[in-house]
Length: 203
Image 1 (tube, rainbow, N blue to C red):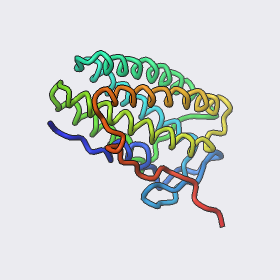
Image 2: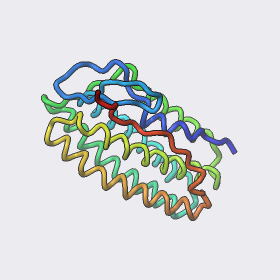
Image 3: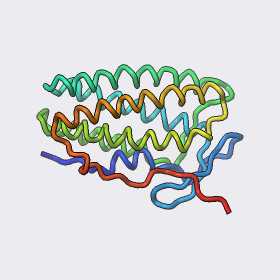
Image 4: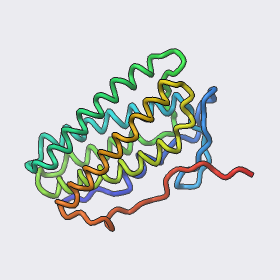
């Protein structure tokens, strides 16, 4: 069985931009690598759209391949919820005062695509199920931390409300993924956590 790198999902959540465009809404953060960076409202919207898009594709793949009912239920839930959120994000991105802008140094898309490509190359067996669920646990842990840190970049009320509604959904996904993981024999100590993004100290 090909083992995916646990660092992949971590990088999706924390490998952010170093050259954010200056806008009225931005937040200064510190990545797990120690970089102090600027993240704008437009960058945040783009990051979430990319994340949801690839998440939907990964969950569709799992739903089609797995023979495990619990894994299929998890995957179908992810497809439904992330597709709905993606629709709302596209509407928000279309608002004149929100928009969407990719940051050249945000590597989250390439990392997520690499993860999806590796999953597509794996055989449809119990090993695939475990890797899919393990990555869902890691991804949701990091994305919850990321949104908590990046929320101050959202200055638009509608975007703030979207993030506030999304957080409990991600927490529900994480709880379900952990439950399925326990059924598959995934041990909590196999989840290696890196430090999430955080605001740098002020002096």
